[in-house]
Amino acid sequence: QMQLVESGGGSVQAGGSLRLSCAASQNTYCMAWFRQTPGNEREEIAGSSRRGDVTFLADSVKGRFTVARDSAKHMLTLQMNNLKPEDTAIYYCATTTSPTLSCAYRREPTDFMYWGQGTQVTVSA
Image (cartoon, rainbow, N blue to C red; front, side):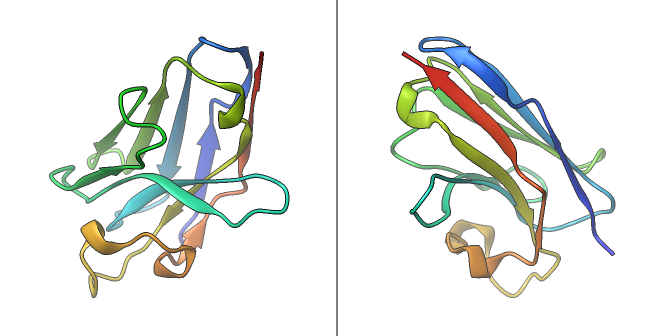
C-alpha cells in the first residue's frame, strides 16, 4: 500500500519561506501538492511527472513557489518563498500510480489515488 509522508510545515511571518517535502513509500507516477482552507475545496498548486519533465504551478504561487521531483528517492518538494497570509492552509501531498492520464492534465483531487495526512502552513501578517 502506497504511503506518503509529509514534512516541513509550520508557522512563518509574511515574506518568509518554508520547504515542504513528501516521500512516497514506492515508485509512483504523478505527484502533486494541494492545499485546502476551511469551507473551500482542495486545490492543486503544484505537480510533477515522475521524471520532472512535466511540472505545474498554479497562477497564485508562480514566481514564489518552486516544485522539484527526485524520482530516485520518490520525493516531491515544494519550496515556498515570499509567503503571504493567504497561503495559510493545510497542504496535502498526493500521488497516483495510474498512467492513464498525463500529469499535465491532472488537476482534480479525484485524479489522485493516494494522499498524505496533511501539514499545516500558517503565515502571519
